[in-house]
Image 1 (cartoon, one colour):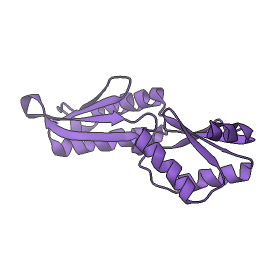
Image 2 (cartoon, rainbow, N blue to C red):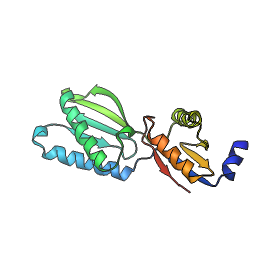
Image 3 (tube, rainbow, N blue to C red):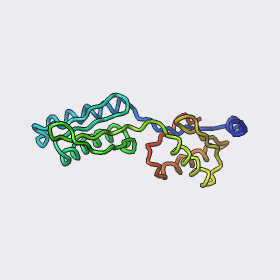
Image 4 (cartoon, rainbow, N blue to C red):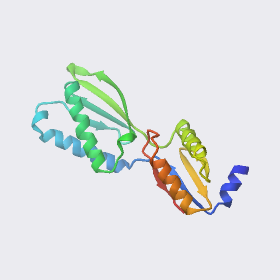
Length: 171
């Protein structure tokens, strides 16, 4: 509990999270499907995006080439809605019924423990004077100085952890 006590004694903190707004993902999926219904290059195609409303998107199309177009449409809609493409984990392409293809895409929510440890290690290696602790699927970073916390946020933004990071509960 020694580490926990030092965090309690700190004056300021923020949380590092990786959460996607599911309503915005749903809006992007709906917009992508609507666009594919109206576009000439998708006429007569089985191209669509299904979503389980939690974490799994399934992309369907006639062939690999068309699937790339489906991915482009979906990604552009997600970007417009503020969803980071780093939140997408593409699974392997599968052959589906009647010579079509499908690809599952997992929506990453939360920071898995391996990534969390890597983030804490990066902060420690940078010798930034903060305490970073893993709390479930997020991190809490604490310090006596708001400036140091701002510097930590900028440091983390500049690093590639393969995750869409957001900073919340800044106090």
